[in-house]
Amino acid sequence: MSYDERLAKRVRLVLKRRRGVAEKKMFGGLAFLMRGNMLCGVLEQDLMVRIGPDSYEQALHLPHAREMDFTGRPLKGMVYVDAAGVRTAKQLKAWIERGIQFVNSLPAK
Image (cartoon, rainbow, N blue to C red; front, side, top):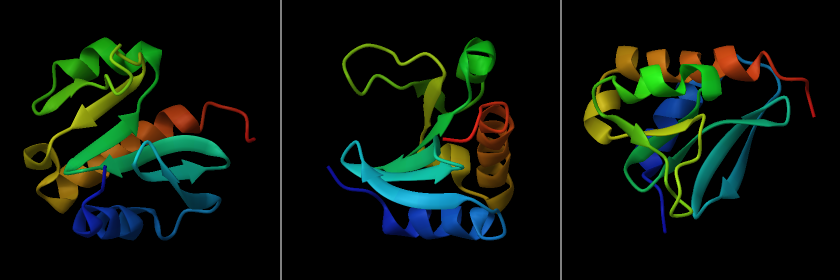
């Protein structure tokens, strides 16, 4: 698998002022970690976001979001957002902020 480098650059712009952010190739794509915890990533044309189990069902009802079923089974707390759902900077930032809100609730690794 591969990832959309243009989308990855856009994610980097959103995260550039955040401390403790790192990139790691994972899932055949590119993952962004914050304080050692998976935050989001880019897989093919999709943004994947870790939103946590409490926000999972609500997020699935948002436009362009679907369950992350990378392993063949849905990963609760993770969603894919297709390209149409992150077309604008505002949309992308909103999804990443959802992820940051959840990851900030986790202890650093």
